[in-house]
Structures are given as C-alpha cells and as structure tokens.
Length: 74
Image (cartoon, one colour):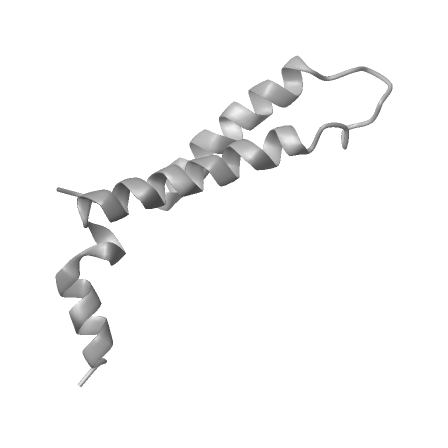
C-alpha cells in the first residue's frame, strides 16, 4: 500500500479553505478577514494524511523504515 503524499493533503486543504473563505468574503473588509478559514482546513488535512499513514503503517510509519532510521546510516 502506498502512503498518501502530504503535498496532496495540503493542496486539498488549501482548496477547501479557499472555498470556505470565498464563501464568507465580505467586500470592503480586506483580504485578511477570516484567515482561520484557510489555516484550519490545511491543518486538518495534514492531520488526516498523517493519521491515515500511521494507521496503515506506510511511509515514515513503516516498521522497517523506523528500524532502519534507529540504526542510522552505516
């Protein structure tokens, strides 16, 4: 099983956040209104991708990778 790439999770979170931000945009208030609508979906996507990879034990959470990293490069 392949791990989900964190870049795709961040991009998806940013798209969702941008849609939420655009939906609540009030003209005349400036572009920095409701920045939490951009930040929270990105952070949530990062947590979801990381949790999925950890649960499936793929990517950096693969037991073989963990053992290899603990031994170091020899």
